[in-house]
Length: 154
Image 1 (tube, rainbow, N blue to C red):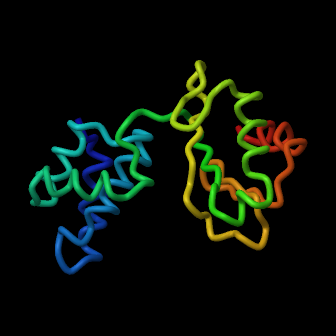
Image 2 (spheres, rainbow, N blue to C red; image 1 turned 45 degrees about the vertical axis):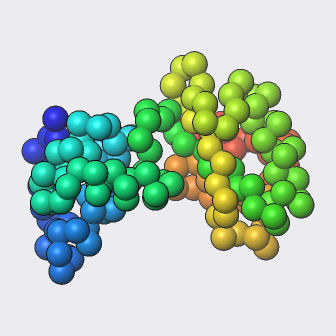
Image 3 (cartoon, rainbow, N blue to C red; image 1 turned 90 degrees about the vertical axis):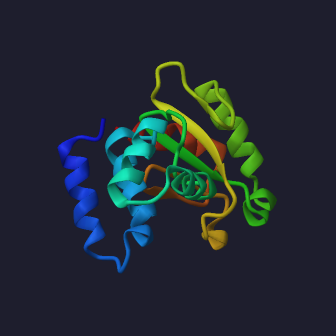
């Protein structure tokens, strides 16, 4: 299941850690970078590759909320719903995204392009409300800005 490239990247990452166990999050992130999510099969192969029990790796994968254990869209939208974002209008942003994309938290658009997920905090409280699409942070949001932001996504 894991491609030669993914295995090579994981092995390379292992060199930077004192024990293979210490690299488990990075190994899962490598799989996700290539596959967009971590399937049960991939998790088992990663566990075997780094030499830990699959159940232990599953515990890490399910604890770390940026490891996706179900398929996600081509682009993941993380909408901050912290207190700061909530006070400054993240619910209006959520409503705007629901209207434009036709999905709510935990759902993927019918075309597989976007998955919308809540995020407890993006650490951007001084520019709330904010969201991330993939690696791009968008701040000081208004519902009117959403069309432009979505158009920027490749």
